[in-house]
Amino acid sequence: MVLKGTEAMAAPDEAARRARSDARTRQLLEAAARLMERSGSHGVSMQAVADEAGVSVGLIYRYFANKQELVQGVILGVLDDMARLIPAAVEPEEDPVRRMVAAFSAYCQVVDDNREAVLLTYRESNTLDEEGRRLIKDLEVKTAQPLGDAIQEALDQGLLVPLDARVLAYDLLLIAHSWALKHWYFAPLMDFADFVEHQAALMLSMAVHPDHRSTYADLFGTPA
Amino acid sequence: MVLKGTEAMAAPDEAARRARSDARTRQLLEAAARLMERSGSHGVSMQAVADEAGVSVGLIYRYFANKQELVQGVILGVLDDMARLIPAAVEPEEDPVRRMVAAFSAYCQVVDDNREAVLLTYRESNTLDEEGRRLIKDLEVKTAQPLGDAIQEALDQGLLVPLDARVLAYDLLLIAHSWALKHWYFAPLMDFADFVEHQAALMLSMAVHPDHRSTYADLFGTPA
DNA sequence: ATCGAATGAATTCTGATTCATTCGTGACTG
DNA sequence: CAGTCACGAATGAATCAGAATTCATTCGAT
Image (cartoon, rainbow over all chains, first blue to last red; front, top):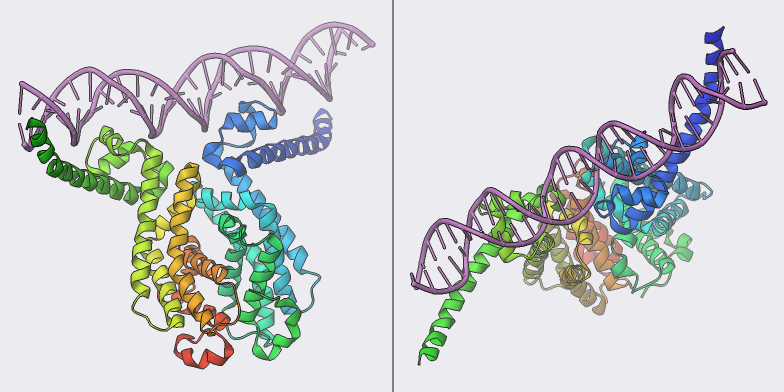
């Protein structure tokens, strides 16, 4: 009876504990992200993260085994955001070419919203262990998936010139990243909206089959 | 007379000193580059650099005020290589479109030869101070110059569709970098030669004016 | 004999990690 | 119902480690 009693209690207890623990984890990751997006993981001490989160250093070690795990958590958080937001943006579009543009725009938007975090991914992923790097690569490939799918669809429907969907998808992913990576170069030339429109127009003039260009005239913009 | 004598001596002395000092500087930078390209600047101690170069730690501080200056030296060295090699590769070509391809190929080649160093640039440039970052940005822009010039020439001769030369040049620079940045993704799909050909073909199908495509049929390759 | 070059042990700093201690809460008992 | 017991959560000062940097000393060439 006593045993059963503690078991019955245990379930809700356990749930409550997990909820509180998840909240703490999120709180710590948010604090770490705020700081690291500004100064990189090496520029941020565990003490600083603790201060930012309003807790003590020791507590961090209850939730993350060491600093590397904390950094990895921050990066995975950003990639998770992308993996959620991009499919959502693509979904409403019907036409494959318009899906391509939607995916690319959404990707750019997420990059713009997380510019520093994208840089963090490039800066820090090499400091992680093999396992961590694999996770990050897998997630990144996953974020490119909607774009790749749209391109493949468009190819299948004969809307594009012959090309390798995986390569084009990754080129575009990289160009979206470049809004963060080379912001110092692009930002003086154009604002974010121009960047997206211009790059999307380049992509389309490159990829869309000549027979179908007229269908998408509205997407081509008026460069230079 | 004594004064004049020491002055007369001073000139050759000074030259010899500078020569030896330059050699040391190069020796140290090469050792540092070898190590850092493998493990990033944070993974390499001054002691390790000294060992690799076969000198003592203290000596490094005679040539570089601190570690940051050493890291900065390594990065600037890579960019200097690029600034030298790329113009040389472009120079022999006459036709602007072929100059574009030559510049892009050369850029890719330098990236391939210095894959780890390119990564180093992305990883470490944020750890430098404002002055160092400015230097690096300036040099990077300079390496994109030959490509940008070729594009502008081609534009002026009406060989391309209307586009912004600066943006296209930087997109291509980034795609060349991607051979290092995303090597884990591209390398399983294709070898280096395929990468260059495929990406160059994409660029041309994007940029070359339809009226002139037939002129460059040999460059388009046969994708997918 | 002089002087810059080179050495490397000692010093200092920085910041990650630990752990003995305290806190807060919920449960049990008399 | 007050008292207190148990236990996980939280603290933060102390420890530890790993480098960066310094500097008193030695070396080698002119």
